[in-house]
Image 1 (cartoon, helix red, strand yellow):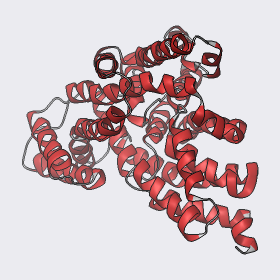
Image 2: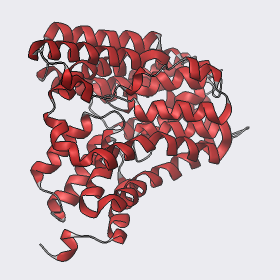
Image 3: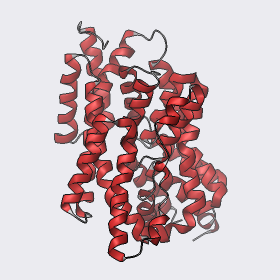
Image 4: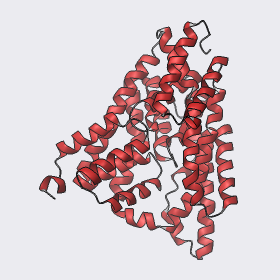
Length: 389
């Protein structure tokens, strides 16, 4: 192993993590694959076992797991400064692209074909949520402690996402808390239950009602970045409740566009919050929302990376995830309900049905499906069908 492999320069970290940030289409699976190719297979900066352990530890943390993995890998090869540089390089390319697209889709009078493409892609978003949830079921079911409790947690998450999106995180935390209680009871030692930071025990609704403007945007972004257990789609109902119903920053159609943009650009679904920020305060609002949303991930890694071994082996952490994990999967599936209910035109439901077939039966990729849906939207509107109201 040569010197560069043991201690790459910050310029190398900037270049390599920036490359992944530019080509990381396809969500967490693509990000993990690219990071493994770079750090384990090609440069051999990190051992295969340590890399798998890091994946497991990141999945135990709230927030976008693949982003946290990118920050951890950069920290592992170049220290805390490397974590900051690598994490920023991983995030910024997607942020630039999504803000540019937000400016195009959310301008005051966008061209009709832009509105049509957004309506088509937005129609397929509920199908993407279904596909994301279904893909997580097998692994979670294999790790279950109790099939009955797994089903109850998943149902609770689905119902909460479909009905009370703004309070969804409390349901996830409650499900995790039940498993923590059972673990403590089983071991007759509740002391290690205190090792799980229940950030979501903070009241979610009252501060959001009291705040306004940029303070409200920061609060929403903080919830998105710090409380997204189980994957980015978990926080879609929360964002929809705040951005559309709570603060009226966006219409339902614009929110669907925001989620679609978060899927077709490189980077995690959490980048969707940048589009919400743009709707509130333009480019500065988008940058602010992204900074706030990703800050918890940097804090978790910079403060806790040295404790990853203990986190992965922590019985309380695993017990919490045994409850919150199935609830999060249910929430991802349940998020399809409000996303589908936001559609207003018959042709959009046809596009949604076609997207479900492409994703769940034909096994096509998310980006390909959303681009096809966008094209279908343009064709439908050019044929004389109405745009969403």
